[in-house]
Amino acid sequence: MKQIIYPANERGTNDLGWLKANFSFSFGPYYNPKNIRFGALRVLNDDIIAPGRGFGLHPHDNMEIITIPIAGALEHKDSMGNSGVVAAGEVQVMSAGTGVQHSEFNHSQTEAANTLQIWLFPKEMNIEPRYEQKSFSNVMKINELTTLVSPVKDNGSLWINQDATFSMGDFEAQKKIYYEIKTPGNGVYVFVLDGALKINDSLLNKRDALGVYETDSITIETEVKSRLLIMEVPMV
Image (cartoon, rainbow, N blue to C red):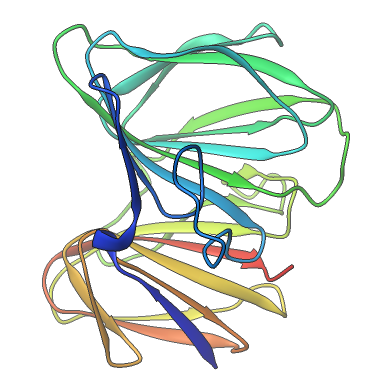
């Protein structure tokens, strides 16, 4: 088993006034040649977006883009004709494929929004662009992991063009979570959304992360009430 610790206070940052961004990997003005990606996981941006502000129409191609609102909601529009609001408790997946343009703005005119934008390198290149979103608010249960995205279609999660699985859960203090790697050779990137937990005797606090690979499973122990996001990705 090998591991890499990603402390929250070592993330890249950018403050544009309307946008306060934290970059887990090199992105925009933040560049660290030793921190480009974790396997197929290329981008993990933790953004706080001011009321009514956001990102205007811009292009993407050949990237799997997952958006998870933590607080608030985003208005989404794209060149595929999709238009709507993605709120906390929901997850959005967009396969950019051969090319797509989209915009996203804070839906509220009075409250800031906090969102995670995550990019994965795709399994297949130049597929037809695709969009999907789903609410998981009614299926998440305390002390259980809920699968948000996976490479398996029609299993209750959102399908993704990659052998990757994202799981999220809220756990009480002093709980043990056993996670078994679903695709042989994959690694897992555990991101602490809130609380504190231990993995392999490493203590992780809010917004800390740990990447683990060359193993078949990991065991997570919560120190206090915690919410975590587990991203299992190919180590390519």
